[in-house]
Amino acid sequence: MKKVNPVNQEEHLARAKANNLSISTKHSVEICRYLRYKDTTTAKKILEETIALKRAIPFKRYNRDVGHKPGIAAGRYPQKAAQEILKLIKTVEANAQFKGLNTSQLKITKILANKASIPLTGSRFRHGTKRTHLEIEVMEKKKEAKRKKTKEENKKKEEKTNKASPKETEKTKKENKEPKK
Image 1 (tube, rainbow, N blue to C red):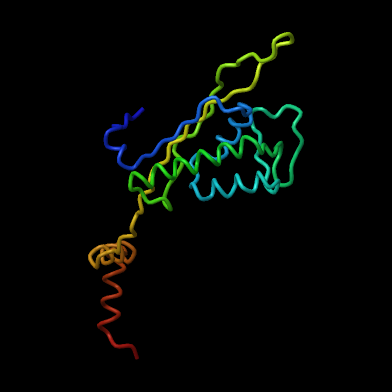
Image 2: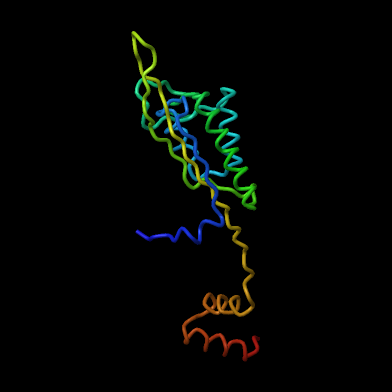
């Protein structure tokens, strides 16, 4: 596996963390898997549609007894987790803007949800509450400019396609020299 030097990457990277959020870890894991490697603008649009119950998040791992949704297999509308992740994406965009990155070209490179500690509430009949840690990293996308081909490269390409066997070239030369009757 190739190791990446984090010092060189820090200039184009922004991070945000949220600890002990009162949201479902399983829902957060599914949302994070769905949003990974997407642009922040599309991720925000997806989450807003999920909150409005217009787009379901596909559940691939924690899909036991989960019904099918239109266009996908098992899926749900995890509104509470989507709201918290949307807040975190807006926070990481603000961090990127503070760092001087172009916010329209941000791509989510790392987004993960971890299970946090489970504090017990109540005195007599105690029960645990759900807690989740979230972490997100975005990186500025590099625009790859399309390079125009030089005349030399075009000539080489034409020569390769127009190459014929030596016998054929001799025949064509003779035919071209002799006028047709």
